[in-house]
Length: 438
Image (tube, rainbow, N blue to C red; front, side, top):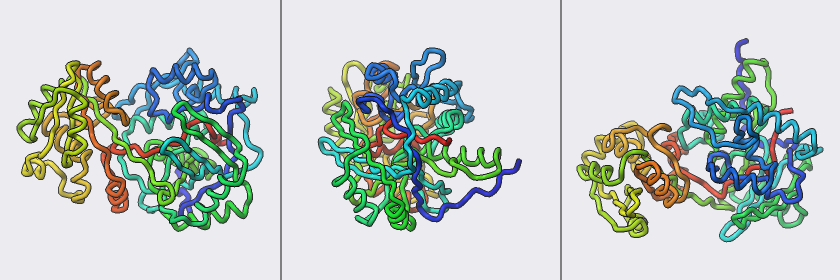
């Protein structure tokens, strides 16, 4: 059957839905970080917290009932062998047994995160899916086929969105933001939980049609930036096309579970994402870089990190050997850099450290591409990246975070930064509210 034309949302639309929630005494015990921030060692910690932790749904392991971080899919985009039928069966069993319940009324959910240095409030709902050219929901990062294929397998098999993507918009303290603040200040929460990092999570259901209409009237003319969840948003759109082709009509797959936060009222925290290059020792990486970069050696990782903080961009710190030696790359040769960077990109894009790494350092200096096979990703923690590098005999490439204004400017021009360039936070906790298609 030919795929009918996909619906075009009337601007930025956040539709209420009947949330699915856990009924356990302590909701924190059944939540998890987003799937792509969970390591193998994290899995057992989450299961030790509660046997019904949501990680059983988002990262199941075949035959054992124990979750697993999936292997990377090949570049062809063919999904890895993943036991998502098990996730579907677990989801159904938990709904039938009452471990999970579906709320009686459709709602938009006010979601608050508070803790040391943390205050973020936003709205969780079904966002209408828009193509990038519509300029309603703006991606700022490229995606890889493997994670999209993996999440498509999960969503299509479970017929559910199990964790929200994270969207930012410039609300300017508008009516939606004011309502979010009023709800958080005056109404008892539906869910309250404190996770192991000391962050308190609270959730309220907004079911009043007039309040929902007020929110959408405020949002309709605005744009949203995908802060976290590019692969899941891409998956939403692939699933939408597949379901339209199979069924010939619209349905719940025309929307995707999202957290929408006013970045004016609640400025995000932007952290770096580091790279690990297995089997390339840092001493060799530094030696190869000396033909095009100034390289300074430090006796310890700490000294190198301190120097990186004050270095002019672009700059990278290389580490990974047991001895703790690190190497700071600064001041690239301007002619070599200019020759390597694409001429069809903006000057702002070409100046990003992740762009320089992807277009110049990886292919020209080290002879590799920024793909899922050759380059591993470590969020936030440079020491974790160095530990992984030491285990694999490789190099950790430590980066400073991009500036929020640079990311916003690049996205506004329709450009996308290289994959895994940004890690916006605080990220929504997985498991507080789920969305099923039926």
